[in-house]
Image 1 (cartoon, rainbow, N blue to C red):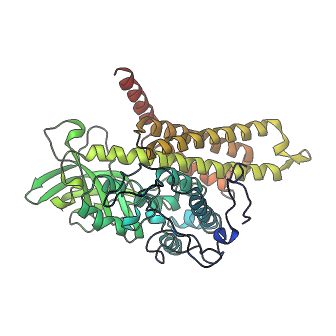
Image 2 (image 1 turned 90 degrees about the horizontal axis):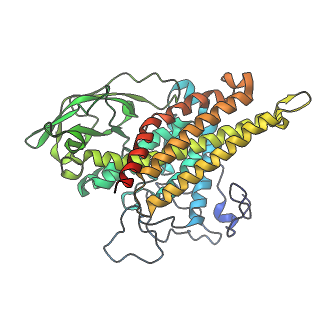
Image 3 (image 1 turned 90 degrees about the vertical axis):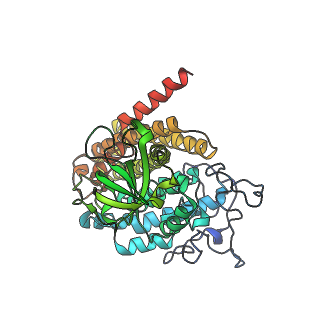
Amino acid sequence: MASGRQFRGGAPRAQTIRGARLQLRRTKLPATAREAGGRYRPPPDRDGSQHQLRCPVICRKAEPCRKGRQRPLGECMIRDPETLEILRDTVSQFVSETLIPRENEVAETNAIPADIIAQMKELGFFGLTIPEEFGGLGLTMEEEVNVAFELGRASPAFRSYIGTNNGIGSIGILIDGTDEQKRNYLPRLASGELLSSFCLTKPDAGSLKTTAVRDGDFYILNGTKRFITNAPIADIFTVMARTAADVKGADGISAFIVERNSPGLSLGKPDQKMGQKGALTSNVIFENVRVPASQLIGGVEGKGFKTAMKVLDKGRLHIAALSTGAAERMLADTLAYALDRKQFGKPIADFQLIQAMLADSKAEIYAAKCMVLDAARKRDSGQNVSTEASCAKMFATEMCGRVADRCVQIHGGAGYVSEYAIERFYRDVRLFRIYEGTTQIQQIVIARNMIREARR
């Protein structure tokens, strides 16, 4: 890699990074999570010394924290643009050289290869957003979406495998869990020893029907959850259940950590989906499952819905970033095709109607990326980003669908056959508009927040 290269998009680098620090070995990527105690560290400097991350990720500002005090999660911004660029380069290379070449294999087998899982563990991918004190990298939201832009360029199945540990499966524990719950689960989630899942969606419409009834030092859970990501392979489940039958609405909902081997917990058959092969989902069924009261997240009833909403705000920004990365991949592949495919003696990229579709796609991707980064920075500064997260999720996922459609159109008949990746991406990205809240849910959230603010 040339030390004087430019950032993506053509903006010149603010400063030169020494080539030795950025050089990523082809046969082995930089210091593994195991070698670094669960933390990402770039390769040694030219003199052999280790380039250090000078401050724990949870404390980003230049001034040191007072002893014994940690700033609230998300208070600070990117710790070091240089270190972020090194991490992003590492992820980008791993995506290009390891993940993309194995996409067809994943689609055919409906599974992530074991060697890929092992490499993702070694690189610390299961703990991208879990704080360093628990063995993760502790990325801020802005750092996370920058990594998600890169991960989005590969089949969504790869990201899905690590996504619950970095998002909906761990963030509830991190934000609202007790100290004991954090110590027990977060280090094992960060290392990839445990795989998590988030159980919110129910099989039918209406109010939450999964119940948790107190029985001494236990809760008895009954109900069914639908379309649960990673359920067939998960070790623990974050489960939303109603603990107060006489309390209507969100105040009666609580969150629990339920382990896979709990008697009475069973799974439905893995769903046969339109796309995203390798990203497994299924029903999770609870039949008189006895869960210790110590597994109630935060140790207090009635906070589950608020926990879920905090988790979803973050997840929506992550999905928006993934959608943007996927759109960039589809557009890059399509531009290459349009430059190579010739009609009437010249590349189809020279035809103005093709150029119009390329230009529209480029502009919309740029707009989505700006929205995602703006919302991520606001969240890192401590602002409530419920509206911004929904705006970004709605726009980016819808944009991704439009880009996919244009790319298939530019490919013509080639876009409709599995020989080209765009055929698979066209099916894969359709789900982005559904999970973490449908487009219509985002519209409701945005409008409701607007009206509430106007009436204050």
